[in-house]
Image (cartoon, rainbow, N blue to C red):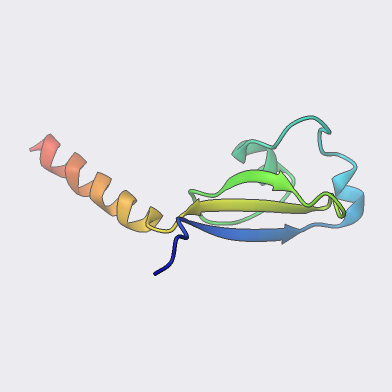
Length: 80
């Protein structure tokens, strides 16, 4: 049995791009998309890899797609 609740993803950017990152906080979705990171919805920037600050760490719930489908179905039922 697995205790994993999130998918994790590492995004490696050119080191010169890391110099543009704020040093005291994580990036919002709008910010990381603005620097060229492209990935599906639901990913949250949760850390930088300290030894290599040009590596961004992201996570999202394992069941994110199912949650989105359930919300869509609930919204469709509520609209009737």
